[in-house]
Length: 432
Image (cartoon, rainbow, N blue to C red):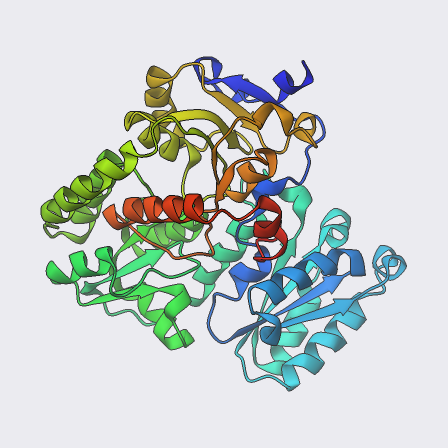
C-alpha cells in the first residue's frame, strides 16, 4: 500500500534513518508555524523588507496580514531576469534606502528568497552602504523553503540573529532577572510560571515579544539565566551561553505531569532557587483526572503543528489511558524527542508515525476517517471527520500544569462546538 511508505511503527523507529524518507517533499500542512517574517518582527524597533519575485512575496504577504504585521512589512517585487543577471541589487539598495528614510525604526531586516539563495547573491556591499547611509542596522535573512531541514533553518537563523544586538550591550548581571526564550505569543504575566518565579524571588522576567524597545531587549544580556521554551531558540541561547556566559535550561512546552515536574526542577536549578509547585500540581491532577476519563474511547491523532512535541503529547495521553491512533511528524525526530519515543514505544509499539510532508499522504484522508479528535491543524487536514483542536502557537501561550488544563479546556470546547477543519484553515487564518 502506497500509504505504508509514509509511515512507520513506533517499534521500528529507532534511528534517524528509520523515519520515512520523502523523495519529493511537499510543503505540507505541518508548516503552520513561525515564519521568517514573523520571527524577524519580534525584535522591537524593527521593520522588514522582503525582495523577490511576486510569487515568492505572495505567501509572506498573506502571513503578514494574518498576523497583523502589515504596518512594519514591505515588499519589493523584482523580475526573475534582473535577479538572474544580478541587475536587481541597485533596485534593492534604492528601495531599502527610500523606506529607511521614512521610518523611525532602528533595524531593517532585508529578506531574500530562494532565487538569491540559489544564485549565492552577495549583498555585503549593499548592506554596508545602506548602514552607512541610513545609520540603521541592516540584517540579511532568507525566506527560502528549500533550506528547511538544514542544520539551521531560516527561522532559527532569523531568531539567532537577535544576538547581534546583545553581544555589545553593556552588561550588569542581575541575579533576579530571567529570560524566557522561544515564545511567539508571550506567556501571561499572571500565569503559572510568572507566579512561581515571583514567589521564589525572581523580580523580572523578560520575553522578546513583550520588549517595546531595543534598550529593554538589551537587558536580556544581563539576566541570570534563560529558560528555553521552543527549539527555535536553541541557536540564540547557544550564543548567549558561549559568548556571554549565561546559563540556561531547555524546557519545551509540555502537557504531561511527569515532564512538567522535570521541567520545573531544571528551572529551579538554573535560577538557583526552590520553586514550590506541589500545591499547583496536586490541584491540576485532581481537576484533570475526571476530564481525561471523559475522553476514553475517543480515537486520537496528533500533528506536529501543535505548540509542543507531538511525541510528548502522545506519551501523556497514552499514559492517561487514552487511545492515540496516529502521529504526524516532519523531518524526523528532534534530539530531545528520542527519549520520549523510547517511553512511547514501551506503551504502544504499534503506534503509526507518519511523515506529514510525504507525497504519499497528499489527498489521502480515508485511512484516517475513523479518528475522533485531531490535535493540530495539520492532523485535522488528514483527519477530516475529526473534531480539530489546533493547540496552535498563535493561540494562548501557557506553561506548566496550567497548560495541561488548557489542553482539556480546548478539547472540551471543540467537542461541544466543533469547527470544521476547512474553517480552521481558511476562516480562522491558520494559514498553511
